[in-house]
Structure formats: C-alpha cells, structure tokens
Amino acid sequence: MAQYVLTRIAWVIPVVLVVSILVFGLIRIAPGDVVELMMEGMATGGSVGSAEKTAARLRAELGLDKPIYIQYLVYLGGLVQGDFGKSVWTGRPTLGEIGKALPVTVELTAMSMMIAVLISVPLGTLSAVRQDTWIDYVARIGAIVGLSLPSFWTGTIIVVFLALSWGYAVPLGYATLMENPWSNFQKMIFPSFVLGIGLAGSLARMVRSALLEVLRQEYIRTAFGKGLTERVVVVRHAMKNALIPVITIMGLQLGTLLGGTVIVETIFSVPGIGSLTVSAIQRRDFTQLQTNVLFFSIFLLLMNFVVDLLYSWMDPRIKYGTSET
Amino acid sequence: MLGAPTETAVLRTVSEWEPQPQRRNVLDAFVRFCRRKPLGAVSLVVVVLLIVIAALANVIAPYDPTAPHYGALLKGPSLQFLMGTDQMGRDLLSRIIFGSRISLYVGFVSVTLGVLHGALWGAISGYFGGKIDQTIQRVMDALMAIPFLVLAMTIVAILGSSTRNVIIALTIVFTPTTNRVVRGTVLAAKENVYVDAAKVIGCRSWRIVTRHILPNVFAPILVVATVYLGNAIIIEASLSFLGMGSPPPDASWGAILSSEGRQFLERAPWIAVFPGAAISIVVLSFNLLGDSLRDVLDPRLRTQ
Image 1 (cartoon, rainbow over the protein chains, first blue to last red):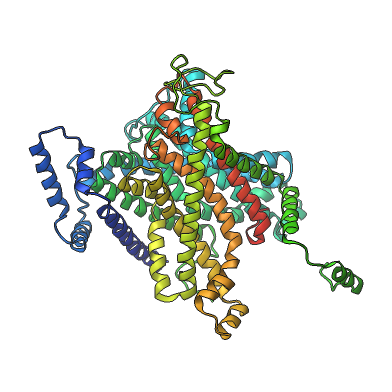
Image 2: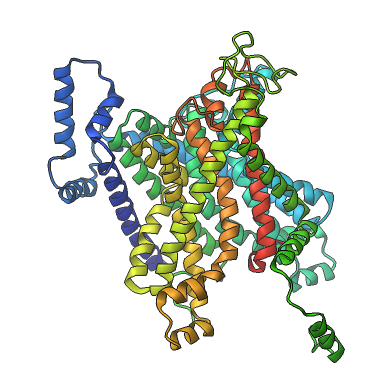
C-alpha cells in the first residue's frame, strides 16, 4: 500500500510538469506582446516614461530576452525552490495569494460535496427502490434537471428569489471558519448549495443505476428470503456495494466541481482560487494565472488520488500496489 | 429462448428478406426511437426547433435585438414585449432568439472540431501504441488535470475574447476526453480477427484505421458528442457570464444574464430569469437526447 501511495504521488509529478510546460508555453506564444497585454490590464495612468520603465521591469522579470527553453528552465528552477514568481499586479509572491485562497476553495468544495451526497444518496435510493413508479420518474427528471442548470443561473436566481420574496440579502464574502463559524456557515452554505445540486444530479443517477444492479443479485434475494425488511436489506446489504461506483463518479466530477468554483466564487464574492483566477485574468496578471492553473491541477490530481484511496478502503477487494493474478 | 431457429422460421425470414431502400431503414429506426424513448424524441424535437429558431432568427424575432425602445426601459413581460425589456429598452425575447445563434454555433462547431481532433489523436495513439501513445497520453493527462472551465478561461484570456477564440478553447477542452474514448475503442477493435485479416491481405495502416477500426467508434462518439453539446453551451455561457465570450453588441445568453441581468436584478429579475431558462432547456434537451441515444446505440453503456 505504502508503495502504491508513493508511486501514485510520483505519477502526479510528470503530469504537473506537462501542465506547467503547457501553461508556460501558452502564455509565451500569446499573439502580440505579453508585456503590452499585461500593461493594458495594469492601467497605471502614469507618464509614458514610467510605463516604459514598468515594461522594461516586466521584461526583465519574465526574462523575455532569453530563449524560451532557458526561460522555462529558470521558471522550473524557481518552482522547485518554492518560488512561483511574483504577481504582476500586487508585486507579492503568487504562492502567498494561493495560500490565502486555497483553504477557502477546499472548504467550498468539501461542503458542496457533502450537500451533493446528502441530496443524491436518498434521491437515487428512492428512485431505485421504487423503480418505474412516479417517484422514480420525478426523481430521475429532477436529477437530470439538476445536472443541466448552469450554476451561474441558479446562483443568481437564489440571490434574487431570497431578496424579493423574503427580503433576505444573501451574505456575500467570507469569514474564516475558526474565527467566526456561524458567519462562515451563512456565507458558505449558498455557494456550496449551488455547486452541490449540479453534482447531486450526476451522483443520483449513478446511485440509482448502481443500486438497481446490486438489488438483482442473489444475496439480496437471500436477505429478503430470510425475512429482513426492505429498509435493512437496502441500507445494510445493498448500499455498501452500490456506493463503490458512485465514488468513481465523484472522482470524475471533481474537475467540473472545481471549475464551478470559479463561477460560484465570483457570484458570491468568495475569495477562493476561482475568484482569484478571474481577477488575475481581468488584470492580465499572467504570473498569478500561471500559478493558479498549476494549483488547480495539483489540487485535482491529489483529490483524485484521495478518491482512489477511499475506493480501496470502501471495497476491501480492491488492493492497490499488489499484483493480482 | 435463444434455441436454434425452426426451419419454417428460417424459411420465412429468408423469403421476407429483400433489400430495403436505405431511406426506409432510417425512417423505421427513427420511429422505433420515438416509441422506445419518448423523452428522447421530445428533446430531439426541442433541439430541431431550436435550430430552426436560430436559422430563422431575423424572421421570428419581433424586434431588432439591438434596437433600443427608450419609452420602455426595464419593462416587465407584457403583450408588447413578451419577455420584457432591458435597461436600454431592448426586447429581451429578440435578444434571446438571436442569442441562440451564438450558443448553437459555438456548440456545434467546437464539438465537431473537438471530436475530430480527439478522434484523430486517439486513433493514432491506440493504433500505433508504444512511445507515440505514451507521449500523446501524457499531454492528454495534463489537459485533463486542468478543470474544463479553468482551461477554457485561460486559453480565452491569452488569445483574447472573441467567438472564434471561445471555439478554439472548447475544441482543446473536448479533445482529451474524446481522445480517451476513441483510443479505448481502437485498442479493443484492433484485436478483432478482421483487422488481422486486413493486415494479411496487405492493407495500409491508414486504410485499416479508417475503414475497419473507426466505424466501431461511431456510436460511442455520437453519444459523447451530444452530451458535449450541452457542456459546450454551458461553458460558452459561463465564459460570456464572466465577460470572456463574444464581445457586445452580440447578445450571447450568458452575457445577457451577467452584464445586464445582474446589475438590475432586483428591479428587473426577468432579465436574469429568461436567458437562464433558455440555457437550461437547451442543455436539458441535449442531455436527455444523449441519454436516449446511449440506450439505443450502445447497449454496453445502458442505464437501467
């Protein structure tokens, strides 16, 4: 197992390396002059002389006078030493900005995932147990509708609806979990809910089909045969096996969930990596953007890894790192 | 149930067998599809209707989508303006009808390009294997490690906001997943005896891939592409929502919701409600259609 964990971590490194090459290359091949693009975003409003100075400073900082592979190697050398470059906009290390934003996004993702599970497992189960009844149809249509709603719309509608019908202004922004847990909850619940219902749609569909598959197996018939109630059979016997493929889907949906944080964080002014990325793009702060994309991919790869571990913990038959015959 | 067919059954089948014209089969298949998957048929109708609306936008739309009506700023839905007007007095219904052009155009073009691109690399990767496969797959791994929306945003941010660049971004976004589907199918199809046979009679690699292997890919690709269409429309709308889509005065659905809708949310909620509803209905239709197609075309992926 330990060996498997190490190999998987070792596998993350080349992928992140390729991501860094892609993003680095993409920014360097941008049409036009990167520095001019960045300056556009800065809108310094200073004199022409100061603009030229800034341009010269940027060029020197980015090392644009050197060949591209040297530029990349210098960048890579920095990465290895924990130097991800400085934000063009604030002048502060990009890594520091990420450090502030990452816990917020982690909390948001975790909460949305919880909400998604709380909605999808009962919904999918009900749908499977009452297959082909109206409950099933309603649940299935509900799931596919949840899957089709764009998060920026549900977010906007929730804000409008609460304001217009109950005069409740959805609290925007962020409060840290440690310092002010109640305010944190109030501010995070709506964005998490918006992200959660999207994920709940695809999870509920998976719960349903996985459970249907399991319910047809013989040990379930045996369980019914010995007189157990439906509730016990479904919850104790069937669910355990049915939830395994659901975890796979959860892993596959992580990317969508993380992408969704960009939108939801923007709508609810949550200061996570998503809104940091949007503002980096608006300010043409490409060094920050580069670091953010890198961290999005590291986060996604590590989460996938956690899902894999969860998988073997849920299903003792799956053992990683041992060659099976 | 699967016993040997009786002699009479065989005779009857043989006697009934006569070459049917191709069109008849397509029509039959369509009728069968409608009977088996009524929800899929309804969503197909919605999709076709939408294509018609987009094509005939200038005939159907009651007003010019960019023409302001200064006497009717931020008016709610009425007989004159069915979906109300925005802060410049532009008719929302007309803007949404014209907006469908951008959504569908971006959706169809980017999914077609993404699928072709993904299929090309997937076929090369699966057929040749070895180092070529390894290299292609590592690049695809890296692309898949970046969340879809973040990847699309980054590409558009670097290339600049325009409809063309959104299409380029989405093409890149859809490449890795199609690549995986095609590669998997090619790897499985490669093992078939008829591929060996083709090799033995001296077919070239290109011919084997295009004639003998790629036809297997058609069904899974069609299903994937339908679901991607929904995704493409959501991503395009999300990019426009963030101000990274087609520049104004084009009325993309996401852009109506964001720039116009959010500012006047409390005074004119209809500006946010209708374009969002349009996106949801279209995406829902593509998702339902994709589901039904999967059930009909690909029994291995069938949901219960």
